[in-house]
Amino acid sequence: MADLTLAIESSNPSSGGEPGVALGLVEADEVTLLESEPLGEGERHDDLLMPAIRRLMARAGKEPAELDRIVCSVGPGGFTGLRIATAAANMIALVAGAKLYGVPSAWVAAVSVEADSTFGVALASKGDSCFMTSFDAFGIPKGAGGLVGPAAIENLGLGLLVGDRFLSKAIQAEADRLGLRVIPPEFSAASCLSLAPRALEVRVGELVPLYGREAEAVTKWRQLHPDSGV
View (cartoon, one colour):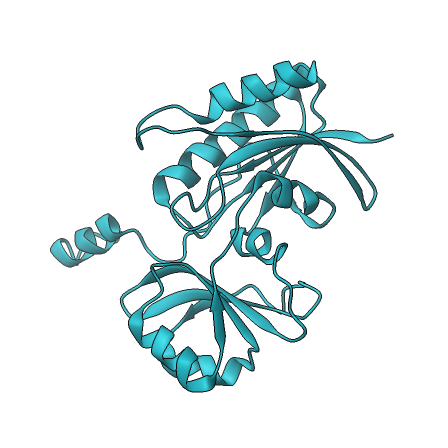
């Protein structure tokens, strides 16, 4: 029997694509998209996610209690969007009694990439580094990914680089030197939903954001309080 599945993608709202939610049926490796709904326009502090979910469920004629799975894009990405998305996913899964799954956001971006060789998805760019995840030509991740700088790009054997407008000039320059085409990422709730068969199940209440690096506030706290143990 197919599982009624809610997908949440709001990890990188300023990087490409449209943040939103999607509803579909998942049975084994088969995924059927039923409806999708954008989050819409608003400020960072606005509650856009829950109203979008309510609109989505109403249009599909479904109740939250009918959900069997919640799939959430967990990052790397924006701190606020990830915190809201993972908190909502935990809450809905708890209330609905649904299974809960996390999907690295790089996987979501990789869904729409057409490549004939290894490619990389660069997220959470800051300074001269980024969180890089490598994929084979079929979009299967070759590892968990991690922070890299310009000097590491050549050793990744990439044929294509997916990077948003925050990609550092140093990494962009290295991509140019290597002849790598750089394309913008595309994030969508439908792509997140399509990954449901490969998503990583977690216990309800334990879904947390995957941050590409330590929060700046934490870094500053460490600098100001070196003996705090934080």
